[in-house]
Image 1 (cartoon, rainbow, N blue to C red):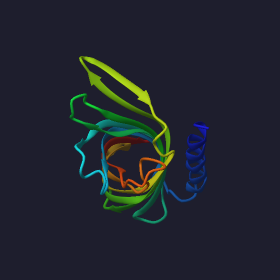
Image 2 (image 1 turned 30 degrees about the vertical axis):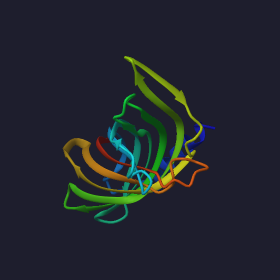
Image 3 (image 1 turned 180 degrees about the horizontal axis):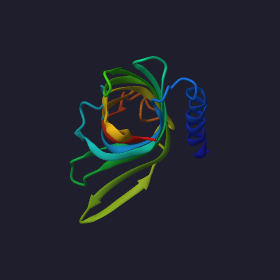
Image 4 (image 1 turned 135 degrees about the vertical axis):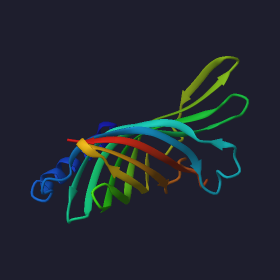
Length: 198
């Protein structure tokens, strides 16, 4: 079952890739991207807790193609580590692994600067609570986390020479992190990334 989100993401990439053959006009294309995550739990019921940003990472594939002089569509599929941490006695933390499948729209201003936004579906692949106690680390897998997440992305990017690109974005999760629970706690966080378009 955990392969299904990855297969869905690849299907989206190749489907858009087929469309892109007649529309890129020499621009856009497939690429790889990866970088750092700075995630936390947000929402009304998270504000009363001492949650802190937890550093994770993401990496994956994207396909960008232009549908005009300055507008591009970009589906992607990424593996991403999110979660949060608490600076309490046992240094507790939630380590959540997802397959993210975003679909974003980029608006370019000139050759490099671009702003983007869109939607994202995320599929949980692993969920673990961890802590440090008397110099040792302990952890256990949990079934308390929702199997799917969805939200919106907003960000800014810049296309560099020789296929390189950089970007910074914000993920606004809209589905509660915990299943079978009315708590308004969501995945929220920043990403910074470096990419390369082939």
